[in-house]
Amino acid sequence: MQRFKDTSSINLNLFTDSEGIDDDVTRGSLSAPFIENGKGLTADFGYNTRIIGKWQADFNVHAQKKDRLSFTERTRRVKTGIRYFPADNLRFYLSLSHQRTGNWFIWRSDNRYATYQSKNTTIKLNTRWYPDDRQELQLKLEMVAFTNQDGKEWTADTLGYLNSLGTSASSINSGRLSFQIRYKYEIAPLSNIYLVYTRGGNNYFDDESGTSRIYRETWRDPQSNRLVLKARIKF
Image (cartoon, rainbow, N blue to C red):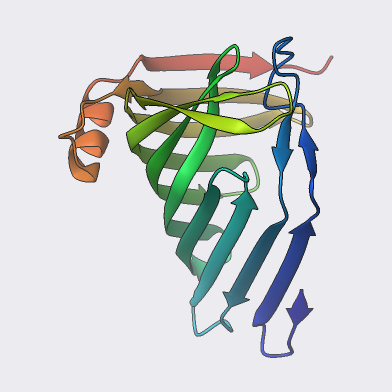
C-alpha cells in the first residue's frame, strides 16, 4: 500500500497460481482424492480518498480467474465505503459490495460437486461512540443476500479431471444477518459491565426472491434475538 501526505492511499496486488492439484476441496474422497487445476490469476485494486472535512471514501475492485480445466471460474467484486467522523469520539462507516461469480465451484458430497452462477450483495455498518472515558457504545450490522442458481453437477475421475453429470444442482439462495448493539461501562480499571443486544441468523429462499426480499425477510425472522447483561470484574 502506498500512503500519501494528503491522507489518501492506493494499493494494487497481483497473484498467480501455477498448475497443480487441489486435495482440500475433495475432503478426503477415496474415489477421487484430488482435482487437477490449471493456472489462475487474482488482481485487487483499492483506493482511499483523502480526508475531506469529516468524510473519507474508499473503493475496491477485485477479479479472480481459476482454471478448473473443464470450465473457468471467474469472480468479480466491486466495493465502496464511506467514513464519517463528526467528532473525535464518534465514527461511522458504511460499505456496500457486490460480487458475481461465474461457475462458482463447491463440494456437495463425496465426489459430487456443483457449479453456480453466483451473486453476493453485502451491506455493512459500524458505529462507535465514546460519551466519556468510561463509556462506549458500538453498533455493528452486516446483511448478506447470496443467490446461486443455474446449478450443474460434476464428478471427478481418478486422474483428477472434472466431468459433467448432465444434471441440475438445486439452487442455494440465502440471507445472513448479524446485528449487534453493545454498551460498555467501566466501573473500575479492567472491570466492565456490558449490555448487549444481538439479532441474527440465516434464512433460505426460492429462486424468485430478489435481494430486497432476502434482506427484508431475514431481518423480520431472525434465528437469534436476545438481550444480555454481563460483567467482568478484576479482583
